Structure formats: C-alpha cells, structure tokens
Length: 139
Image (tube, rainbow, N blue to C red):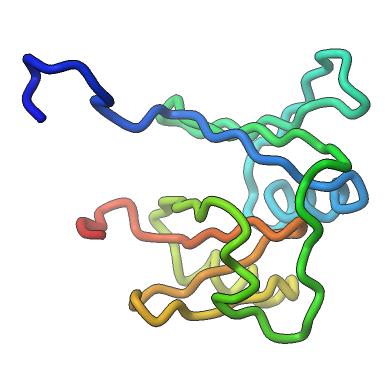
C-alpha cells in the first residue's frame, strides 16, 4: 500500500495488556525487580490502578488488572498450545544475555517456538515476550 492510500502506516508506541489481579504483584516484580524497568501506577477509577512501564524512546506498555483477563497456564512446561492466548511482545535491550539469565534466575518460564530461533518467556499472567538486541533486524 503506497502513501497515497489510507490505511495503517505504522505500529504505535503503546501496548495495553490485561492481567488477572492475583498476578499483579508477580507481574510488577518481573518488570521492576528482575528487568530493572521503571514502573508507574495510574489511578483511573478502575478496581486496580493501571501499571505503566515507560521506555526511553517514548514507547511503553500499560497493564489493566481485571478478572476478565485470561487465566495463566500453570503447567510445568509452556508450549505453543498454551502460549497462543494473546499477543506476543518484543522488547529490545543492549544486554539480552544478562536479562535472559535474570529471567531464568527468577524462575520465569521460557520456551522455543518452532518458527523462530529466539527464546520466548511467559510473564506472570501468561503474556509471551522475547528480548532482542537493539540492533536486531529481521522478523
């Protein structure tokens, strides 16, 4: 689609997730304590404050804690069958190896997807994500 046509032009710099309230503390700790992100709470009059994780490039994601969110798969081994419950997110870092090890040390489940060479992790609440180097180019 060329510029002369209407339609989607780019992916925005925000993602909004839904996580069950019983995973709130673990989810917040993952990004704040394990991955070292800034974590902000915003009260919009919902049952729980929204969590916002901003990044230096102006992007970020918000998390709404609600009973309507999908329940986390609690089996020992995570696989594609149980990871296909929502969007998969890609985070960029200049120290992927260290952050992946911190995730493993924190007991965050990981798995491999047959169509990818990358390692994927599952946050408390079931959201799937991967960490890639900031310079990575590719699918």
